[in-house]
Amino acid sequence: MACTTILVGKKASYDGSTMIARNNDSPSGIFSAENFLVVAPNDQPRHYKSVLSHVEIELPDNPLSYTSCPMVDKKDGIWAATGINADNVSMTATETITSNPRVLGADPLVKYVKKNGKEKEKIGGIGEEDLVVIVLPYIHSAREGVLRLGALLEKYGTYEENGIAFSDKDEIWWLETIGGHNWIAKRVPDEKYVMMPNQFGLDEFDFKDAYGEKNENLCSESLKELVEKHHLDLGLDGSFSPRLAFGSHDDSDHVYNTPRAWFMLRYFNPHTYYYDGPDADYKPMDDDIPWSEIPERKITVEDIKYILSSHFQGTAYDPYSKDQTNPDKGKFRPIGISRTSCMTINQIRNDLPKEMAAVEWVCFGSNTFNAIVPFYTNAKSIPSYFSATTLQVTTDSFYWASRLLGSLADPHFNIIGMEIERYQNAVSNYSHQLLEEYDAKMLENKEYDKNIEEANNALSKMARRETDKALDKVLYLNSCHMKNGFSRSDN
Image (cartoon, rainbow, N blue to C red; front, side, top):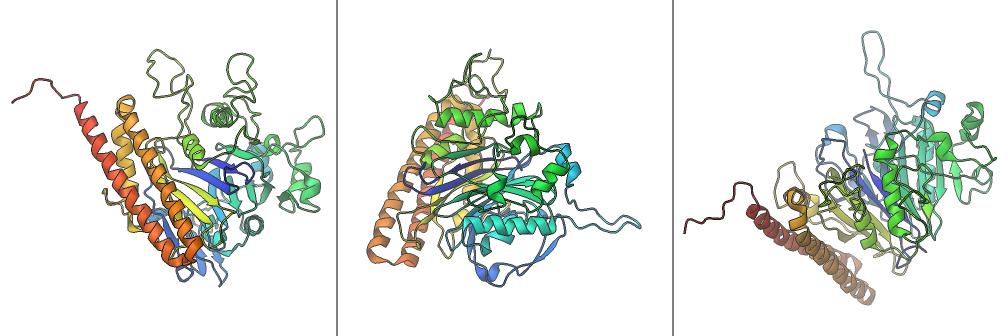
């Protein structure tokens, strides 16, 4: 999967919460319908078998309930993507990342091989299809998530390179797989945000801490030996860069990956560096854009939604630019791409009781045109407008309504864009109003279960009302600009 991830430490966020967010993008030419739902302990499997790799794993008997954004079509497995469990621990999996031949030669991926004649079937490792289901229901902190997933990677291996985020109310951790069985993880500094655009990200690591007190750094037991034995350290000054050792810097990265990191850094730190001209500190094709940075101001939910919806606004690379003569228009892969399946912002709030602290903001389809809606995650279920998506196109589903809205608006972006902005602002405004209202109710009456159900239903109804209104307006404007229109009327 091709995705973009943002992580925001609690001292970098507007309200002291931890926030992890990711665009869950489908491969080119694929649009995957998804649901947003709650998985109850009784619905969690005790014996898990992967569809793609055929690996089988026995799971513990004490799972927590958790939210999930699985694929509707289960032919390739569950692909739960993201969620928050009943202990307010969050996970998003995964950001597909890059590697290099030296790493993959030293620790090959564990790929499934079908039985062929006399050759036996070879079971594969774990991957994006599996990770949320086999990890999130069993962890009670972000650090515990890293350790559980790390143990599973060392035991079963993986068939792909992935980056995975974990958060709780205090910490955010980022884990990246290395080859078939190794992994590396780092705690996100509280005062920083992290930018991840489908490329190996970590740019510094402390092996002494990882093999000692393990305060900020964790890794597989054999990682340092792997680096030394296979000459993976490419540093010249004695410092170790995981990005140089384990990642890539191919020509394709400079079109697909690094420009997204450049735009994120440009947005959150507009005055810290120079971004344009021959003397720019960072350019779109640079390989040394930092993994994390202190923002110039605190980051809001709306900032995250904006940046994960972005298409290089204000630069020469915007595909929606009105300048038809600009040769750089559409040159780079935008963050807000057409084939996003879902995006969530998993927010664990520090200033509220644990029963109501976790909120998951959810949207479907292309973020450039959709709106994001929050839900309290310690719920028994999610309203059907979000949780009962089928493979049939229907405006009874937020997924399909969002997809339709984007497809209608895209051809006439510069005409319809204002209506999309009004829709997004309306949903955002009402969302915050409803959260404020129900936060206050729960703080007063402590009736968490009842009020969470009421709040989530109210949020779903609001989202449907505003989405239907936007569809009506956009359909009208789009119809007025059809190519077979004619100004002379028949009456």
